[in-house]
Length: 344
Image 1 (cartoon, helix red, strand yellow):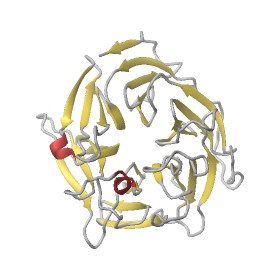
Image 2 (spheres, one colour):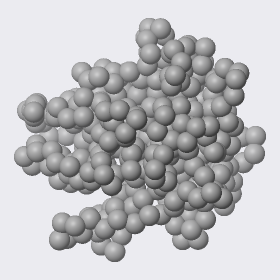
Image 3 (cartoon, rainbow, N blue to C red):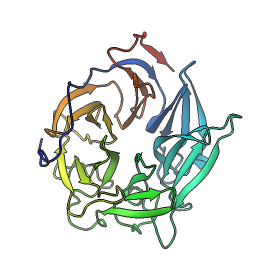
């Protein structure tokens, strides 16, 4: 595993990552998201075909294990990454990356859970001819309320977005107050040369808000065979003093994230800080990385098709993991023990 960035920025790490254990398992098509708003967990499903994208937003009620459609394929607009954004006018809410398709635009939306059961849906930003997007993939929220999201060209490569792409692979910052969208990192258009490091995927900010991190998943390039020659790595860039842009030339690789057998077609996908460690995925495992040493320090194998993303519960005691064919609930070692349950 390579590491290039150690030494300039340190955070306090006083213990190793905890050994989270699976306590509940739901056999559902949980592909992305997820969002944890007790007693519900919201997730996006994997499309059955990219020709007519039919991904939806579903939710599971942890009280009885029942799963239901929350936003159907007719209106979901090919949703992918999601994140909770606190309470808006007293209502729990979350943001969604809507990738769009050839007939509808890509956009970032907010859903508020109203008391009468009818969600309130608002478009935060929608692409236009003057400001096109690719297929917004994953999202995080800064302490100032700004939305940061990745926008790789996967939709074009997979055939459900305009091809050739109208925008470069990039990362954006959207300010809900000023309603201004800014491209903060331009990773370029897809070219004929090997695509090594221009597929931003998972995204998060450091606990102090000084650094932006993202996963690069170029190794799994749609339409081409999986290749170790392309990156599966984590990168970071430093924010400016105003925390509204990235400092030029501050982009650097944190580390490569490979499975124990590098030949396996596994990539780092979701990305978050859990405590003071970076947490990502690689195939069927959760991977913890020390951001100071830029080294993998723990792997937690899981029984699922492929770990794609995850979210911590508001009380910090549970970790919801989406694995394409399952939703898994992990608990902290010091949390109250629960019997392992499996729900159909």
